[in-house]
Structure formats: structure tokens, C-alpha cells
Image 1 (tube, rainbow, N blue to C red):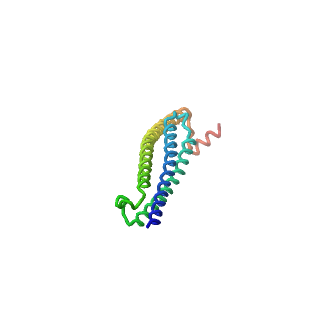
Image 2 (image 1 turned 120 degrees about the vertical axis):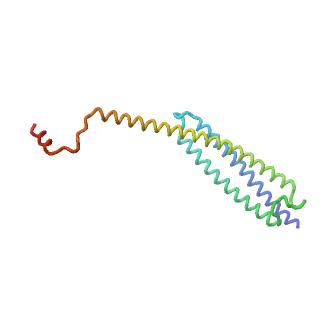
Image 3 (image 1 turned 90 degrees about the vertical axis):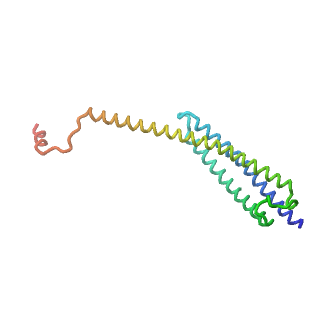
Length: 177
């Protein structure tokens, strides 16, 4: 029975390690999300599309790593629940697992949730700022199109345009001159 408890505790420790690693990734994600926020606040002249794209690419890589950790965590969690014969760790009888490891696990789950919440808030702000910039760009593009039409219309009235359909008598008359 003691060795079974050790196996369970080892699984718990792996789960904790996954959470600790995920916290590091989430801190990096939060840092990149804050960089995005600063880039979005920059004036149009200062906004570097390349820098913004680089930040997005780095975030994408980190999110893939976080997904891999989630998969590993869920695999271990499922294995632990099956091994213990419970649907939830709340259903455990006292002494089935090392209580200090369970508390450590709960602590790290809470930290991950806090980091995700903070990142979600900044992401929401970034999304709103991005929408505002897109609307501003749409307005600017429409103004440019209208100006282009106006210039084109003005330019066409200044120069007489030759008729494409000239009848043969008129062509012959011009050739005689």
C-alpha cells in the first residue's frame, strides 16, 4: 500500500511541476501581451508592424508550449483519479495522498488562474485597441479613396479626351488638313 501512495505522490509532484512550468510560460505570455499593449498605444508613425508580428509569433510559440503542458497535466490528473477510483480529488479520504502536496497543487492551480485572468484582461484591452485602430484605418482609406476620385474627376475635366468612335468622314477630313 505504501508504494501505491508513493506512485500517487509522484504523479502529484509531476502535476505540480507542470503547473510551475506553466506559470513561467504565462508570465512570459503576460510580458508579451503587455508589449503588444505598448505597441498598440504607439503613434502610427512609431507603430512597427514587424515588431507587432514578432510579438504575436512569440506568443503563439508560448501558447503551444502551454497547451502541451495542459495535456500532460490532464493526462496525469486523469491517471491519478482512475488509480484512486474517484471522480474528483475532493472525494478522497484523508491520508490517501500527501496533504502538503495537495495543498501545493492547489496553490499552483490558483497562481495559474490568477495569471490567466491578468492576461485575459490585458488581451481584452488589446483587442479593443486593435478594433479602434482598424476603424481608424478604414476611415483613412475611405478618405484617400474619395480624394483619389475627386482628383481623378478633376484631372479628366482639364484635358479633352479624344473620342474612340470617330467616323470615317471625320478621319478623312483630318488627314486632308
